[in-house]
Length: 250
Length: 219
Image 1: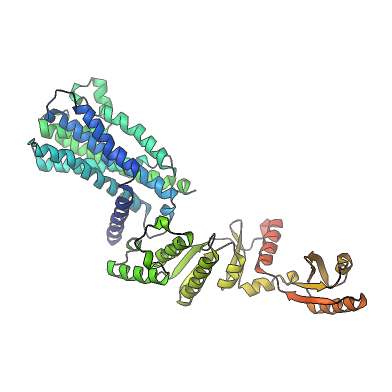
Image 2: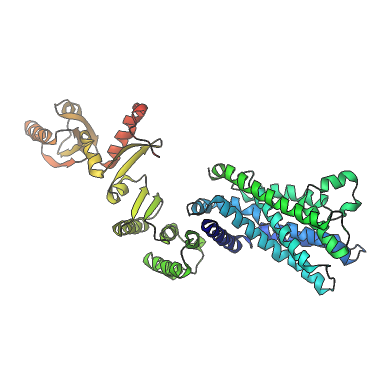
């Protein structure tokens, strides 16, 4: 138990290091801040829809892009600058490093996703249950952070641009199939089936329920599915990184 | 880095300050590392390696590519670290560095240890590689010299002749006689022990010829 706590403490040290180094990197700012901002503006401007209606999509998209912007760049950057080897020489397990990377992605996502929510609250739009919203936000950010670290596992490269390109290739289709622009209940049956494979679908659905009191799935199912996705993605990220470590360092 | 070793914050601060001062980096502690020279980066890496006061230190070519001054400073530090009771594993291609710093040397070829001993014992294993360097006042026939008993090989080395032998005293007597007989003057004569580089090359070449005879394997 004490070993687990020690390793968890070291994950926070890794996260602290990532925050200092990677939050201000160009790709993180572009994909995590600038990109969702402009996509949100394109989504809102010129459409005669109340802010409350577009809010779930807006929050979902911002959270998703922000929480997945840090993770893909860390591993290739660390491998390239040879700092990954140095960290692995410390009494730190690879999974501790992965958890640290997830934590730094999670914190970035949480900070950025609070911005549209705070603006909404400032404009007087209240969620039905604030605690549920906060809980959903935490679980969704954890889930997307796990996805972002998984996206950096393959290919085992030391070129950050390659990982960023691959992650963009995965992230964009996910945004379009997840009920961000069109709610899931308005999709055809095949669209609903495709939407169900994306974790973002459940978060957007959750936010829709909390702000508009209408959604496609039950709120409990949204939570449970997000937790299941988080566990599966984190497990896959750890396993794939462990498998590819030698190739990445060679 | 110290936090990853579980060093308490207060101790970490003390260790960092003392190491930075010891390695001459305290004055630049607030500067970005990317502005550091290679020597400064190596010194910083050594500080990082020592932050948790380890009992053993593994250094992979620590002086490779460094300027003479930085390399000498680091070598001095390795000696001090070793005298402080820490074990230092040094991996290097620089035979002179290994000779100066190491109590025991392992020679590795294709991932296998082909010899492990003190520098002196390693050299003693290759006494046939010792040679005499002699300079005469006139050019001599090297072929004629090399045909004499006790001389393994004679090769020109600048204005000198390098004579390989397992019995230097007999060869020196022969050279004095040879000089008298041919009315030559000996300008200089030095007996040279085989260098670690010679031993290394001999071991590597010897083992390459018979790859199944490696006595050890690295773990």
